[in-house]
Length: 295
Ligand SMILES: [Zn+2]
Ligand SMILES: [Zn+2]
Image (cartoon, rainbow, N blue to C red; front, side, top):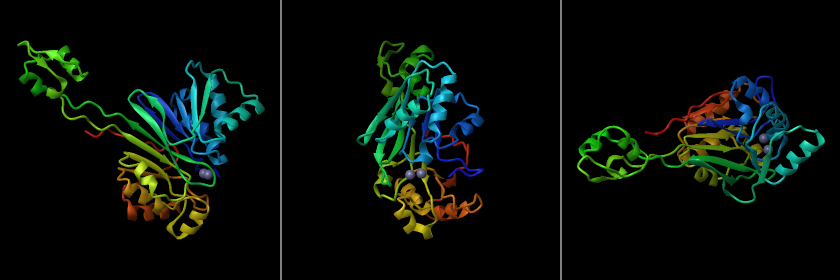
């Protein structure tokens, strides 16, 4: 449930001006407004499952998005029932929507969305109803340009360098063909973001989120409540840390805390997780995580 200083679950990812929302619990629009972003142009929304605490913020968000001109459709992805939820909300609430909404129900794991230079993949979780996790992964980037090498091959500084960087062959001053691979380093890894909630602990999750730069993962309970967590198909923060460790992720942000913990008591979840995976943080409303490129 939302608490005075703790909103329900939602994560906004911004990449090169595009915005992607993962879940939209009650009040998400309030938090988005506070961020002062051009958030009304969210490109796509990825829903983990249709439990109220993850989707009741969507109708308001969709209506607010009507207050700006948008020509591009809004894409919504989620497990079965997401179409019914969006359609019935539109119908019953008489929602005025002046743009196209394209809802896709995810029937099997795999790549569900492709953008320029990246894709989003869905994978199965195990909860009290069908639930999916997501990763957004960038393609490899070309290797770093080596100016010394370019000079060595007698390619003068200028537009020819840009052509090489763009992957094109050029002619040197002496008339030799110079290929990009001669002047570029090895391809560089793209960034990876993963989002996992609500689920019981599964060893398969680590593989899905492997090598993420940032993993946002539920850590609903303390270690002592592992049985309760399993019954309710949720994870302890220790189990989340296990996922992060086994998946060799760089950083993990815990999310989706049980309302039984006051803000101060969340420290327990953090310290237990850090015993297993030190690069853990407790996420808070509107906390921002920059995800840097690995050079
Ligand atoms: Zn749930
Ligand atoms: Zn939930």
